[in-house]
Image 1 (tube, helix red, strand yellow):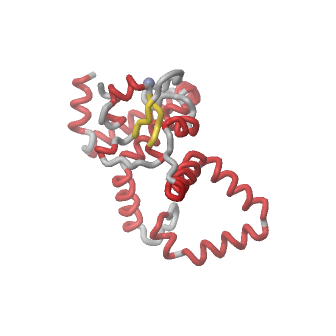
Image 2 (cartoon, helix red, strand yellow):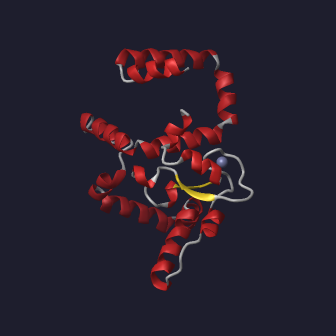
Image 3 (tube, protein in one colour):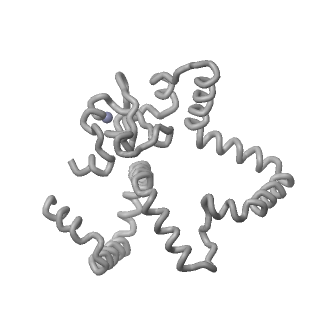
Length: 204
Ligand SMILES: [Zn+2]
């Protein structure tokens, strides 16, 4: 396994190695569609976690890829988004949005509800930040605990007793002190993880 890993790391960016791997994966998928589907269903959460972690760690790479693609296809507006696109088209976007929501007030309320639900931990962090600023109230570990499902972000086992707040990307590695980068962790798991990135942890 270790040998394979070394080989993989050495060649992972070679064009023909990548092409061969992609072809093999495609063939495997075609021959094992049911198996793959079952695996995906059982491990939905695990896969989503892994993708989220990857995106967090590779933000710069993703942005670069997107910029390159856009530079190569100036006429192709598919998937275009982000701050630049928004700034350039702000008037039109806001006009369309307001127009649509004026006609569909329930859709507007629904969007707000959905956003607050999806960002509940963030909303609470903002409220706390505001309170801290105006009243000097500190965010307690216990309060953060209540924002999350009580699962250790490192070993994925339930947390029943002691816990710590872990930065998914450690602060010392450039991670931010923001909700998207926080998770609960067993004290032991946190010790083991120390200042590793999640991807480095998988190799241990
Ligand atoms: Zn744990």
